[in-house]
Amino acid sequence: MTTMTDTSNAARFREFKMPDVGEGLTEAEILKWFVQPGDTVTDGQVVCEVETAKAAVELPIPFDGVVHELRFPEGTTVDVGQVIIAVDVAPGSGDAAPVAPAAPEAVPAPSAPEPEEAPKGRQPVLVGYGVAESSTKRRARKGTEAAPAAASAAIQVEMNGHGPAAAAESRPLAKPPVRKLAKDLGIDLATVTPTGDGGVITREDVHAAATPAPAPAPVQAETPAPVAAPVAPVPVASGARETRIPVKGVRKAIAQAMVGSAFTAPHVTEFVTVDVTRTMKLVAELKEDKDMAGVRVNPLLIIAKALLVAIKRNPGVNAAWDEANQEIVQKHYVNLGIAAATPRGLIVPNIKDAQDQTLPQLAASLGELVSTAREGKTSPAAMAGGTVTITNVGVFGVDTGTPILNPGESAILAVGAIKPQPWVHKGKVKPRQVTTLALSFDHRLVDGELGSKVLADVAAILEQPKRLITWA
Image 1: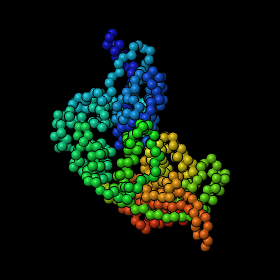
Image 2: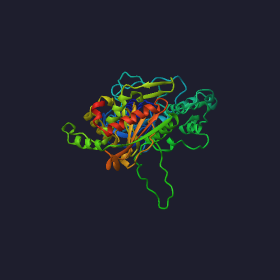
Image 3: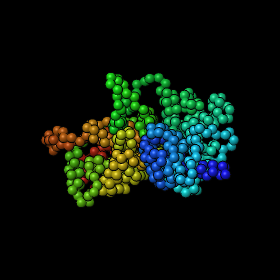
Image 4: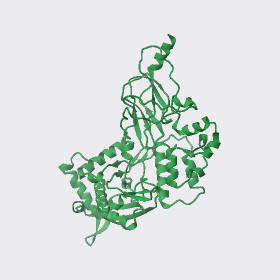
């Protein structure tokens, strides 16, 4: 009877692990718990918000029950595969039995790994990736529970009894994002000295290998990308001279991506100052147009449309550089990125197939993109696959800047503040609405002529918006 009771109690508890969302993500920070032990939860209910290297997303629980235990407090970074919450799925059926310890405390046996059985029915996933089919097979994990993704390779080395010698003779230990960073920076991981636990190479190790000695940074690296919103204020003790703010999640990913972009793609930035008085008049007229009712109309809408027309006239700018195959990949679609400043840092969601959208559709897409970003609900999928980007630094009163390319893209357009300035118009000096545009592009695939044509076309449309009709 004792055995039967123990088995029954053990079956009462189900554990929910940090989902494996793919795309190289191996960990996430728990930002906020929406439930506490003793709370009743239902299938599909959001129990917590986490932040990955790409976005903040909400996690739904995939079963009904009563929360028994939260394994990690808010602010903790958890590896994919670790148990984060235990739920009593049969409350009231007897005394609660202890819940099995989390994955990190279980040491895998050195025997041959057995594939983890795929759970039937609905599986928990991060927002933006959809629900996995019940027949989908996940990668094999060792032992009863998955070891933390960040240390799995190192644990395997220790299990096999080879220690540092085996690590030196085999493939260097590093997470997939670290391998990609090393590839982008042209660093051979075999030459990098690891400082992580178990001989794992960290991002800091790669950066140290890339910059072994202090040197003056290129202008592009010193100039910030589109201005991000400030982080939440940190209480400062009276008389304190410094405050240290941990860099993690989205902000950490941004920093690493910008370093990789600045030192991989040869940036060129060109500028043009343009009279946009007629564009501002068009914006005012569109706000009164019944066809634009219910959508937000602003100068960014016309600028976005102007860039799409310029790309149509100069398709070579909408491309990517394939380093592995030494090829230029021409894109026949435009996923238009819009840089958005959020409390967690700068993110760049994009409008898929923006080239096919009418002006009202583009306005609706821009409005939805901005509102979703402000609410912190942008999904990783919304930020993937961008081809070109617009950053509106003018909202901060800045005249212009030299923006850094979003990794994998060929061009980024910075829009400065629109303000009245003295301007020669029809032979006379008059006050006109003027702004400065800056276009940065990857000089490996966009030469000066092509980049200049794109920027000149955007400027020409903003000066004479009727070209949207004649050039589209």
